[in-house]
Image (cartoon, rainbow, N blue to C red; front, side):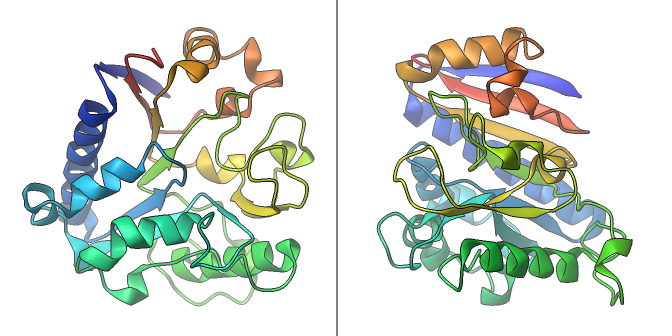
Length: 256
């Protein structure tokens, strides 16, 4: 794992840098293999990034027809609910760019129980990635034949409690080693609604993980995780994000 830390004066500068980072990664992946797989994050920090990607200077550079959107986690609410991660991304980005509808792979967390929604999204991922786990989907008779998928870029945030995606301190889901997607029926976060999340083994198979962090309330956790991840790993799920590829932190001044 190669870790990089980049600091910016404010959220606006951070968001513009993140848009530039994503455009560059998307172009390189499209040129290399004709496909770019991006896991999107919810929350307040990335919303301005999504708005930046709509702007002409970034929009025209994104290979939208070759880009596939996925989600790191979702609240078990309808897609038009104010707390829906998909809903936020749809309003800020998806509805305003020419990404094909079939390239948007949302977590249908409103369907059935959280456990059923998690299983359904894992099936979606397995069909897309195929046995090789690289996005070149081919039929497979056994889901167990497949390895963990390898996303090109996974976007994450960090809560002031050290959670990331919907992996909360002390939750058994943090220790999951087999499933790709898991239910979080009793989350410790806000809003207190059940959730569905990617698991750590999936996140850590990514070619690149991009943390976007803003706000002074997260500073202490961020400093611990960046400077000595071994020490807080028992308490902060974010410290257990150690991808096979690159780990990039984009921080605003308050968070750093």
